[in-house]
Image (cartoon, rainbow, N blue to C red):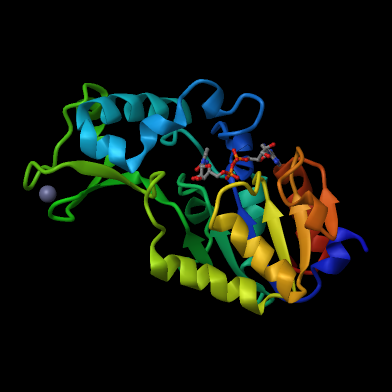
Length: 245
Ligand code: NAD
Ligand code: ZN
């Protein structure tokens, strides 16, 4: 069956870095992904604790590559935000930390930012939250500490070696449990537990629809695969499925 027909019931969505490449933010594992230039191990939680100066110097370089302050939502983000007006779209769980779903107008109640949001940093000691923009200069020299208690600050994202926020994950799991179809967009589906949402839905009998430019880890389990750019594919796909008026 074609992808749009499969999306005619209740739909849960999982997005990944591929949804934001058309906004100029590099992905991790695509052909010019960030991991071709950086070592992912530098960004582990244990590395931050062991050597905050080194961690933040590397992190500042990574943030400069992401260029989040310049990025604007693209057609894929706007299509998903528009589809959120339909009661058939249960929710969008995103692995992205760029805030572009929110910027496109996705309502809070239908958005689960599984890996947090890079716009902020949080103190590990007192919990004080500051904007990354306010500490970016200090971060570049590795000298960033909490403005309130001088403790170690962490990007307000889930680092390798850290667990996801249980409440945020539970909301996404609820959508994956209740959907008739699970739509995964712009994700290599190789990072867990996010990819596990798609597996759980498929194991329950939900249709799995994948929109991705290149092969993913779960292609063999998919009921339909759309091998196109998210920005080009989603507006038409969601309209055809009746999720966008
Ligand atoms: P990933 O880099 O592993 O996979 C991205 C996938 O999207 C690749 O298969 C790639 O071929 C595909 N893709 C790239 N551009 C596309 C496009 N325009 N249309 C359709 N497909 C496209 O990303 P992931 O699966 O999200 O990996 C998860 C990790 O990456 C998460 O932890 C996330 O926090 C992090 N990340 C986030 C951002 C962001 O916030 N924008 C950017 C890079 C990495
Ligand atoms: Zn503090």
